[in-house]
Image 1 (cartoon, one colour):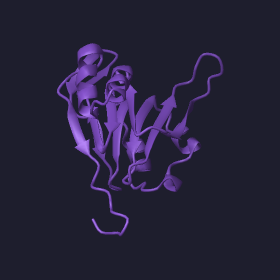
Image 2 (cartoon, rainbow, N blue to C red):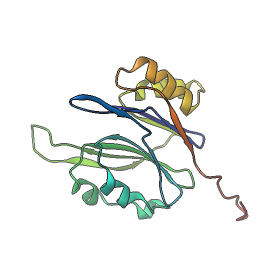
Image 3 (cartoon, rainbow, N blue to C red):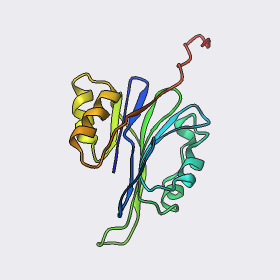
Length: 166
């Protein structure tokens, strides 16, 4: 798994990339989208189709439908921050044994911070107490056996001021 956290314009992630066979490599899990937004990923390793759906999204009205996501049939959880700072969780879950149906969607986050992955509980606790996204992932790397340093960060581009000037 992983830990990805976002707070106050900064997204942070750990570096462990793994499959069922164990740790494969270490690399960042944050993608800077063409829209200027940020996408932190957990789950499936080949996420090109998800990135293609989200790459140019600048407003919530442009988000993919639930059907578009579920048609990808990926086990995936993403933390999406649009260029103006709105936070969303994007997830797709493999079918359970009870009904065989995929589940998932895109949901807006009501807080000004969020975290996904196996270390999210640690990250939430640190951010709730005033810590940064980077500090939250650093602590998660110490406590969550599936999250590993180094921690990588990416900043959301400076938001436009209300008068339209940068």
